[in-house]
Image (cartoon, rainbow, N blue to C red; front, side, top):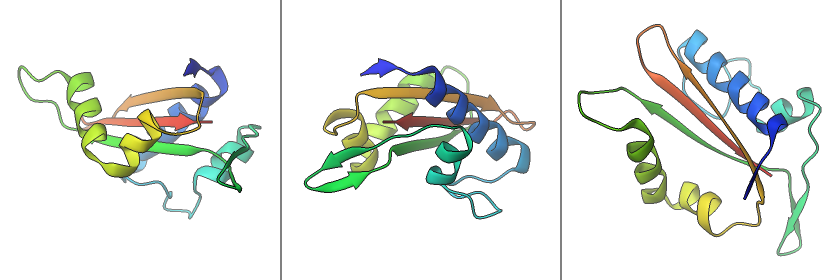
Length: 116
């Protein structure tokens, strides 16, 4: 897996959008999803998996910090416990990633990890 600045920018925008509008999800309140964000960011992703063209993937997390808890450790642990998120991290065709984090006005961290 290698770092991708474009995916970082796209992920960061989504995290800021979620924090600013106080929602959590792959689809914005306006109905825009991952494909729209990649297109708007000028990013083209195309990976063939079992004969199916995939245009990218995304892991999300919303984290409310508590004393003594390590956000990075907790977020990765919870991603690994989720079947789809784990697949994106460990057993997928993705070789590029970018992560964006934003702290909302309520102190909650919104994390977006984009893959291609």
